Amino acid sequence: MKYRIYIDEVGNPDLESSDNPNHQFLSLTGVIIELGHAASVIHPQMEEIKHRYFQAHPDEPIIFHRKEMFNNRHPFENLADPAVRKAFDRDLLRLMKNWQYTVISVCLDKKKHKETYSVWRFDPYHYCLAVLLERFVFFLKRNAACGDAMAESRGGKEDIRLKDSFERLWENGTDYVAPEQFHACLTSRQLKVKTKANNIAGLQLCDLIAHSSRNEILREQCLFKGNIYPFGEKVIKILEGKYDQEGQRCFGKKFI
Image 1: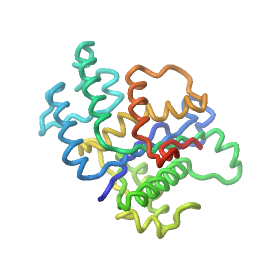
Image 2: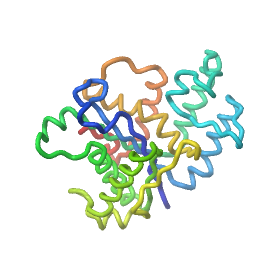
Image 3: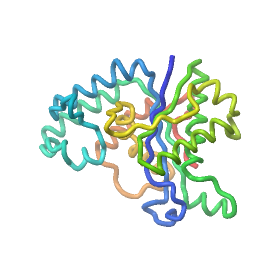
Image 4: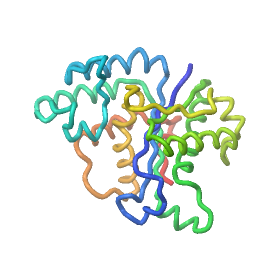
């Protein structure tokens, strides 16, 4: 079986902004999906709910994006109707619960990282990606499977940074995963990068859960300030059964 981990980030990797409470944390969330399930179940069911509520057409695909959906922005104006919003949230949450996928989220306190490593520091994005991919490799080994990785394009220099970081891990490994283990489990030395326009179901699912996963981790660390909206709380409840774990050990959440 072949799996793909779809990656989304919340926050930014700039260490210089770490003293700002609004930019203190960077998280990477990965959604691991078996490619056959993504093609035969998740993608068609996601397209069906888009068509049912927003009249999506193949020539002009609608892309699920949490921020636009939350604020009822085009093409999600229908969600301003409370009855439509209630029905849509119910149906989307049911799908998110029933789909088969595994979640790994890594959250970094950039302020603490900056203070701890005052002379030599990891690049925050690379640090989070290293931990995320280590756990993806462990998942693949436990399931005697192989896989690759995909992230959403952020354009220009950002895409180069993403790809370079991934290739460095492929070539050098980490303290816990040798390069040979990456080579044995991952089918490509390159990170796949796709734009929103590609309408990738796995990337959209990752976007829908990444903020809730990050907020849950911060709340567990008593670092979350503010309220989590009811939809986010329901996503957190679903994620209880989606985080990667083996027996009583949870590998799906990591705060660093």
